[in-house]
Length: 101
Image (cartoon, rainbow, N blue to C red):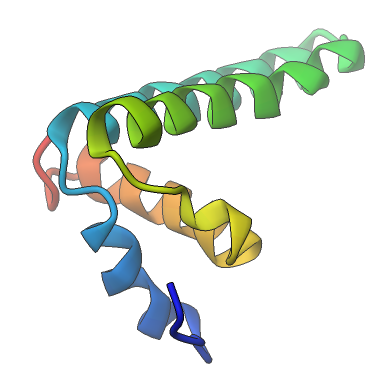
């Protein structure tokens, strides 16, 4: 990950290259789904203390995918904001079947 990316558009192809393993992508999809569910539930029920679960579910699932299945280091450590955006863009791309689930 020696490259420096000047935009998310430059970063996203790299991000996708780090998610070639199907199980890793599925774990990301699961983690992002849980993040969205927790966020919506916490807001609707005014149970804001539950928001701490969002990074646990999101990063927990993603990091298992990277370390166990993809066998690489998550881009989050070097590119935290681009990586977070990549999670949601990849989620959309999987949901819309642009990327295989």
